Image (cartoon, rainbow, N blue to C red; front, top):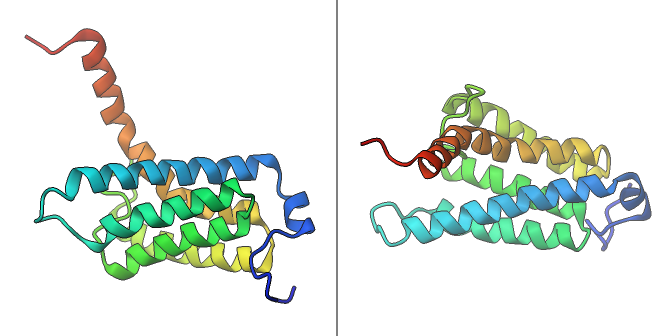
Length: 166
């Protein structure tokens, strides 16, 4: 495949080969990242000691990926999500997910695993090959964050149902 002026525009091969589920996965990942980015921005910006570049670029990348996935530009959405992963690693932020995952992905493992997977996702999207694998690669940091949040979510639900201990 040659790169022309259409770049990452959807082609008949990519839209036919990629099912509706691929679009839904990318929409879900981008929506989750948008939600997390906007919540982080709203919570941490008032505290001037915590302001960093990741807080400001996260919502922009996430909203861009959400719009691209909604408009069926799946390859471009994969590239934008992968670019965010690489940008966070380049900025040198502590982690993509500040909550430890039940999978045991430490900070070093996140930095060693997520970077090469993001580069692989970009290459797969540009080559228009195995888009489902590229979507899985860019969904891993979000899945890691979500899995790390499950104990906190369950605890909150328990407190809401049964109330606080006396």
